[in-house]
Length: 409
Ligand SMILES: Cc1cc2nc3c(=O)[nH]c(=O)nc-3n(C[C@H](O)[C@H](O)[C@H](O)COP(=O)(O)O)c2cc1C
Image 1 (cartoon, rainbow, N blue to C red):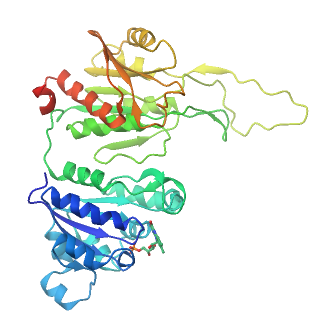
Image 2 (image 1 turned 135 degrees about the horizontal axis):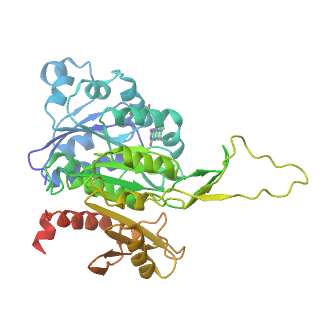
């Protein structure tokens, strides 16, 4: 619940602005009060009247209104809020925030605030993946701005990909996560989560990789952070956004992934959800391997990659108290996973079937089995976020700190 919480919602000029109306309703249902700042472009998509009716407050747009400046200036607007939310956040407002512009009321409030800021980007996939937007997002994240989404999906511009604004319910959940002191059974614990695929260079333009999307690993990192752990997510190349509320280190190869895990220092929990390539090119070429007329296809000599799970599981003073591996198998799932737990020396294995027919890679749901010294647990098919929450709950239980829901079971 958000009872008594005050949200300043900045509505910018994107087609997703219609969802902001729904967001206001969801926030008010949860007990929050919402006040809106509407950009000029935003007003082309939703009317001040709609926002005013739903918030039961006036809507602020004009920085130079004398009345506003005496009664409710730009500083006061942010002072009166517990959290600033930009939804939809256009490419334009992200650029203005990153550049420190204060050229309208919305940008000025965002520059003048010392309150936490959550943004929900919404834009065409090409705008979202444009180098300028990528750099602006990186800058804002480094400054502590929280992001929710964007999601993958069909967009109003008839394209498909990342850029779709998160759903109002998801944004309301993220707001609640930021404002309501949660159950934090893993507070004080440090965790490293690996996620996504690795890329092993053959030459500067070609690589060996796999279909891992990073969705499951990223969800686990978020779930551990939600339970209070201090999380470092070591992510291979993925197209999904960095989760808010934790540190993300981006890597390409297995060597880099291992180095990033070790650089995290002493940790209590390691969850190795990344699909690390088993092999890499023995001698990657420093320049592009050229195809020449009459030349036989080159043969590729492979050499094993470092075994990140086995390395982290090695007994010793640096070993995390709990090491969880993942087994992605297409046959003999449970038997192979039991064997993997023994070979690697990790504590638990989460086994999931990645046969193409099951659609785990890139999909939204996962059917897993949790394998530990005490046996095999079969979990029902769940959304990847639910698998993550369940696993994080189990981890909290392992440390003797059950989250409330687990304790009640
Ligand atoms: C029909 C239409 C839809 C638009 N949708 C988006 C959008 O979803 N995301 C975005 O970043 N810009 C979108 N734009 C462009 C923005 O409205 C434009 O960049 C504007 O300057 C944003 O201003 P603001 O960030 O101050 O609100 C759209 C423009 C039009 C005409």
